[in-house]
Amino acid sequence: MVGSSSQNSGRRRGPKVATRTLISYLTLFVLLLLSFVPIFMMISMSFRDSLSIYGDFWGMPWPPKWGNYTFALTDLFVPILRTMYLCIISIAGIILFATLSGYAFARLAFLGRRLLFFLVITMMTIPGMMLLTPNFILADFLHMKNSLEGLAFFYIGSGQLFAIFLLSAFFQSQPEEMFEAARIEGASEFRCVRSIAIPLAVPILITIGIMNFLSIYNDLVWPTLIISSPGLQTISMALANYAPSAGNAIGQMSRPDLGIITSGYAVASIPLLLLYTFGMKYFIEGLTSGAVKS
Image: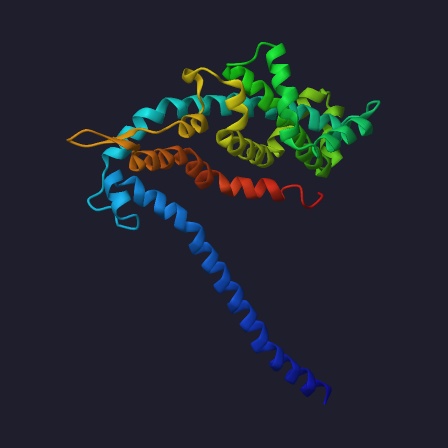
């Protein structure tokens, strides 16, 4: 009797669970489609000219205007390279200093270690917008305004907190025996970092690099405050000011060319798409690498 009653209750719950699962998948599918609408519209508009967009906003891009991408790539190629340079030097500095700091917090015993790590955690709770004014005053005092290296200096500083937190947690999850064996063989702490800690932390270092790349590449507020020269604009600044005039055989239009502008957005998204395509595997691996203590 007990077995039959449990089977009957299981049959009653079965259709309900299946219905809930179906509703969940349908909801997720609808949300996925809605999230692709802006991307589809951007790609569609990037192959059209302003006249066709203003005349029929929802029209299809036929015939496609491939010249829009030529104009956009010509105008935005240098800002993209400039931003890539800024991202590379910033991420290199973040990884270098955060690796040493995270290892020190995780593996070295020194006076005030717990207090300093508590301060790191505490500073992570401060909103970044509250630091704009003091950082701007500091940049002016250090004569780092209107400089890509000055931008990188503050990106390196702001990226330290979360990177130190992740790396410290990762290094603490690794077995102490490996480091003790290396010390017994005569390895210094720097050798332990270079030969043991860094090779083990490659996935999480890639994760830190990807997260900071997205943040730096898309940042508009801080570069706008620091950079005043048009020749030093990052890609976000260039896109914010990108408004080529629409023209035809008769003359120029008073409105900006939406086709070239949206093609500029598409061109600027290429580095991010490549980063997601080739780095997502390592990004997920880095996020889960310290989840289970060895």
